[in-house]
Length: 83
Image (cartoon, rainbow, N blue to C red; front, top):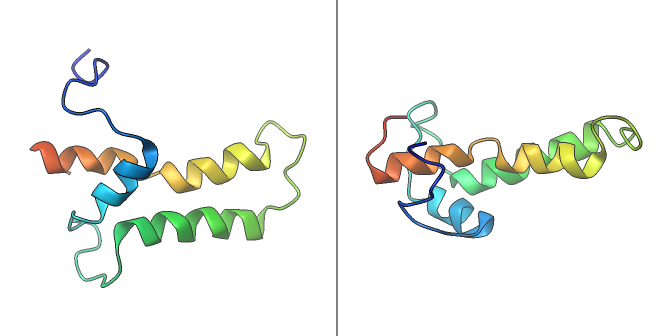
């Protein structure tokens, strides 16, 4: 109920990915590349490792998308929520 209204801010997925680059991730504070880079790396790694998922419950489009968006919730830390 607290977050379902999207009352903090409305943005596209791409805007949220860009906003993540402003965050220092507590789980990886020493990483020198942007958080969005990690998202793209994850999606590309899934595509490379699982090209044969077509037709299964995890179709390639969805599986790759989950890899891209897996850390998106961390954007809430920029609005005062804990990581």
